[in-house]
Length: 202
Image: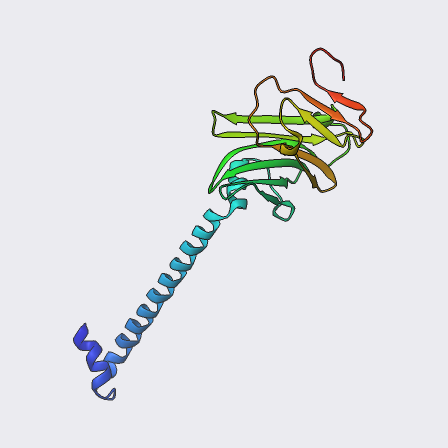
């Protein structure tokens, strides 16, 4: 076949009319192969980019929930750790804790809807995650508009961060603490509006 290729370029085509068709077929085949290779490379690059994207990792991690990419907000904790707050198609608020490229933990902490639901039965909804002495994250959502600050066990007030997300007040802390988790919510005037201590009633 290499001899035929050379003849196609070196010998006048009028002498080898029967070879012209075969040359055209080979050129078309080579062109098609190049196109397929290019498309394959582009697809692999896009797949690699998609794999590295935090949003697609969160979407895969959340299983059945359809996350809204436009509603994601990121908080950088340090050079390794970051938190994402994001909503899904049902208006539930999720959080994701990342350690570099991997998701450490995730959960739902509330809803954008003000109507009664599981997450706003109490004035504060919260969840705590801890893995040995490596990871610690407490995240909560304030459901009472008058609550302006919270106390959590022996965690210093400076280690409790507040974050406004889509008009809702969230708080979080990465400080390690021990169970039971006791949280108190106060108004700006110091009035106690939430207390999950077993010895008291909210």
